Image 1 (cartoon, rainbow, N blue to C red):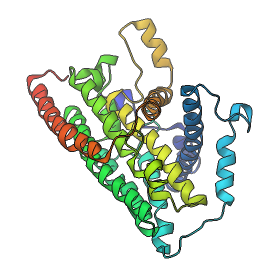
Image 2: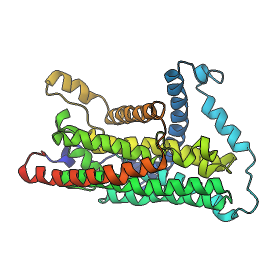
Image 3: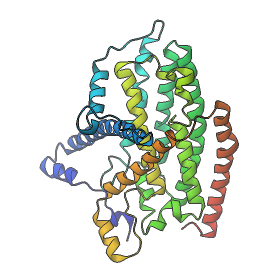
Length: 361
């Protein structure tokens, strides 16, 4: 049975709109999809900010936000309202147009990537055939926004933070691209949805297990490279507080700072979602080959599996941040160019050998 037969790309709401408004469905459905993505990004940003503050609090044996709402659940809303009404200040000598444009670019990149994220077999706004290439191309907007923000601020610390971020993100993006290329080669497709469907079957058909030993190794290397791509500890040299105040967004306040801040957290979810898509079976349940258990696992909606796996990876990112000390710049670059890049090239060749010998599937 084909993948399309098992998981047809349909949506109940979209079908209802097409039946009720056949003439306007071509406009209503995309609008509903875009509004859904905007709401999802907004809710995710607020939830992830609260989640990280609670996680770090428990790591440090304290409570975290507790005052606004039950157990501090409304704290992100209070912070968002504060930033919304806070005055936006522009440094003297800053390039006004670029200064105000820069925070919009990383946030725009998050929306563009969320559009093609396969949350379930019927929950995906678009599924381009070259989805992996699309992700790599659109993610460049984040780097561009950071570079423009640091340069336009007319602040030497912001510029230094932006240059660090640009060098770091461009360097580690090479390793990320090679890891994604490995999965594209193994699955035979660059569509994110088809990559998920290539892992149908038992839990051992997920790419983290399907490629003997190399799958787990490539997953670990993805976590390291994506942590550096996100500028998170232990690779947060772009905004090292002890050296650069706040790095590239030092001069930003109000909604300008909020856009950088929200994009940072939603990008963490996107990186975790891509890890789920490439290695952990995406929205597929972890079947184990026992009929009764598999029936129960199949009864759980796919999007719940996707979000559960994704938040597991998000927790790993948070664990990294509040456990490891920050690396020096030279150590960071050595990690990429002397270790990760050669290892990824070797991994790609070994993956090709495994495919030729028939050990990869």
